[in-house]
Amino acid sequence: MSDTVIEARGLTKRYDTATAVDGVNFTVGAGEIFGLLGPNGAGKTTTILMLLGLSDVSAGEARVFGHDPMREPLAVKRLVGYLPDTVGFYDNMTAADNLHYTGRLMGLRSAERKAKIAAALARVGLAEVAEKKVGTFSRGMRQRLGLAEIVMKDARAAILDEPTNGLDPQASIELLELIRSLKAAGVSILLSSHLLDRVQSVCDRVALFNNGRIALMGTVAELGRHVLGSGYAVEIEAEGGDGLVKRLSALPGVRGVEAPAPGRFRMACDRDLRAEAAAAVVAAGGRLRELTLDQPSLEVIYTRYFQNAQEEARHAA
Amino acid sequence: MRREGSPWQGLGVVMLKELSDHLASMRMRVLEWLVVLVALAAVYAAITQVRDVTAQDPFLFLRLFTTARERLPSFVSFLGFLVPLMAIGLGFDAVNSEHNRRTLSRILSQPIYRDALLFGKFLAGLVTLAISLIVLWLLVIGLGLLMLGVPPGGEEMARAFIFLGVTIAYAGVWLALAMLFSVTFRSPATAALVTLGLWLFLTVIWPSLAPAIAQAFVPAEDQATLVTTAQMLARLSPSTLYGESVLALLHPTTRTLGPVYLSQLEGAVMGTPLPLWQSVLVAWPQIVGLVAASILLFVGGYVAFQRQEVRA
Image (cartoon, rainbow over all chains, first blue to last red):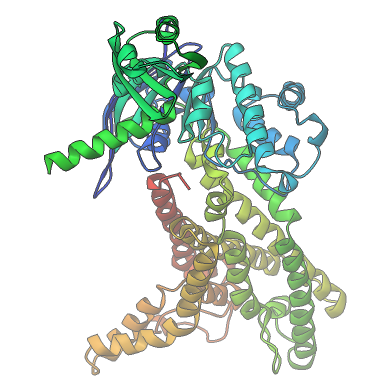
């Protein structure tokens, strides 16, 4: 992998009564989109705040571009843009004025600031409402304004906390498009979410959080293989044919065949067996209606993983 | 552990933004009207009274500030309760409103320390208060000049000027208190109510409670200790400190703020005014107390803010 941008080693956050984040290890490479996934309260936001130096680290360490967020928070915050969960702006100020304020805090000079704000607002599609008060903005517009702030900052890494939370489908598709364009511009992105299908479409790698720990980490395909046991599922719809279940089960590389409905089969296998399955159906004298390969969906992985975890816990008890 | 970078980075930016917010806000509009009405009422009351009573007073001009007329309190006592109200009004939602608008984490993710945000807000509040108080002070002096027709002397102006400074310090105490509660209470309404409650307690109840507490602990025969203990206790309230320092500054004949001992009266000519610096010396502990109280309260708010979680 290319250079490491964000690194967490044994990152831990303890409160008086509970441990919110417990020995988390992960790295985000340059130009990568890394997703932190997990249910609410799993420790995602706490991890993010520790990476930004906005929350004390109880144990372990974090490095962002080689800087320690605890000791050099200003250096970290100069390089990293942050979009908090349901970002807020000053409602009585215009979009441009809000950005001017943060731009001044970043130390940008007046002329430079004006040019950058105009460019950033155009980039996120808010140029026409630059002089409108933020109080009139929709949720999606606020999120985009938050991204404009990151664009204006020329951040080399962006940390986005639940960026699509509470957005309608259209707005969240637009936002994910913007996130992809940030990546294309060379920004490394760490994002957290509990909305899985959305995240699946943009993340290069994901980490599954559970009770303050990373339960699983890797690409979506890797996670699928790990949790579901088999990487591929082939769905078959066929008419007629004798003993299709038996024939399909006999194919090499097939782990099991289910028949959820008459004429429908679901085959779990080690590799893509669509061609072999088609041949088997035809050989049995059946008429093949439909044949699809199921990509492991993050949603399924996630649900299955937590089911497994709960069952294990029950067995242990 | 050493932090890199300056804690003041961004201080000016935060202060200017907060100041422009304050000056454009509805609260400021209300404050402006309060200032004008108070100035008119106080000066009217004082002037009608001063004309009748004292033509010979060498400090005629200072009477503008301290003279009361039936049913209208003096300018100084107006300030005594107007200033805390103004300060609490400006400070009670300083930090918790940022939490509630969810702007706090976004602002703190910019390359500034929390120090700059809190101190910038405090300075902006103090400057706003100072502007209103200076305007009020100038109004009273201007109206006094017009209506009395007597120019103030140099020493009178100096005393009035120090009085203005003490009033700003007094405003700082309440502003720092309001900001402390704006950090500790998430809801602005709770913060405002708690601050106002504490203000009422310290201003109205504490001065009469202090002698009672002193009596409970000091034997009744020891009159001197009793009086001084009661006074020391009463001085825990910033309102008492302010009242005493104003008394010493605006009534030049005030020789001491505590009990007078016979030894202190030896050779003193009763009723003669003290020189300016002697008056300042009499009020000095009170003035230092006010400044120290605002610093302590601000530090309290600062520590609470540094330890606070930024997440909403």
